[in-house]
Image (cartoon, rainbow, N blue to C red; front, side):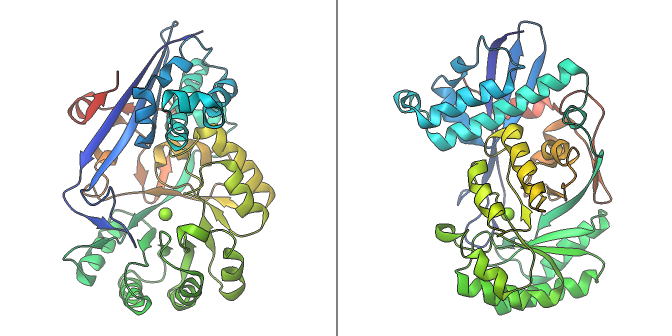
Amino acid sequence: MRITEVVPTYLSVPLKERFWMSLSPIGGIEPKVSKLLLEIRTDEGVTGTGEAKPGGAKSFERGLAELLVGEDPLMIEHIWHKVFAVTHTRTGAKRGWDGSGILAALAAIDIALWDLLGKVSGLPLYRVFGGFTNTIPAYVTGGYYREGKGIPELVEEVQGYIAQGFNAIKLKVGGVSIPEDCERLAVVREAIGDEIDIMLDANRAYDLRSAIEAANAFAQFGIRWFEEPLHWYDDVRPLRTLREKTNLTIASGEGESTRFGCREMIEQGLIDICQFDAHKNGGFTEWRKIAGMAAMYHVDMAPHHEPHLHGHLLASIPNGLILESFANPARDPYWPALYARAPQIVNSELTLLEEPGLGVEFDADFVRRHGTVIT
Ligand SMILES: [Mg+2]
């Protein structure tokens, strides 16, 4: 079997509202959410479909697909390394393929190749990966800082998630002072009771001293984990001090671009939960190597975003903890509309479909309305 054609589509949907994390709004100051969809076609008529963060689109505009055409699509590790090599040879510079864009493109390529392998084998991917379960817990992310909205709207929002059946909710922190965040958390905890898990995501809001103060202040609200507490410029090594001086479970890794960044966190015992995002960087191939290492260090995997993709990964490992999801169409217009077929989340659990590969089909109309095919 050979790859005959690669069809990338850049997808972008504007958001009507700014959803602030601690330091920045989703999609930038003119908010939008974008994606790269990828179809890999073969001479045997089987097609693999992948999706990733949009950073890889530019590389495809500049001819990245030529690396794939003619390759055997089932030689996934070979193709992975061929594309990855662009990041550490002159090839990329000569063609204007930048390193971080390549890692996002590689995510789409790798996921599409695995989808294709699943289709060829007639098995859903979680079974191709060696199946551990087919039902995985899922939480909902919300509690963004919304312009003109305050604590009453926050309470209404979290109550809406509970009405949808969620038993775990992740809230944003770090966008206001620590006492103000404590006030938000106190009201939410009071409103939802003690049975619902609350996780906190600081999106790199704090320096070390503030992170320690915040973790110790937030602990009273029964927090399941504290995510990405530290500013971007030094967000790994000081986790040790944070862990020595606080009791919260620490989650991080969504910002890591390779297994080597995760190695540091895992090997040094700096995190309890690894959040490496296969659809942002490197795809399933990279993610599974990290999950294997994490298992050896008693670290659980709870990947960032995309439950319909990461579901297959978590369902195939013993240290798969929980999936992230979004239940507000104003924040994530894709989940309810991009997919003609996708696994559903019911009562805070995602059950994978038995269709071969990812089991996902895009809604052609939605893609036509919001997508541009890259030629
Ligand atoms: Mg996060």
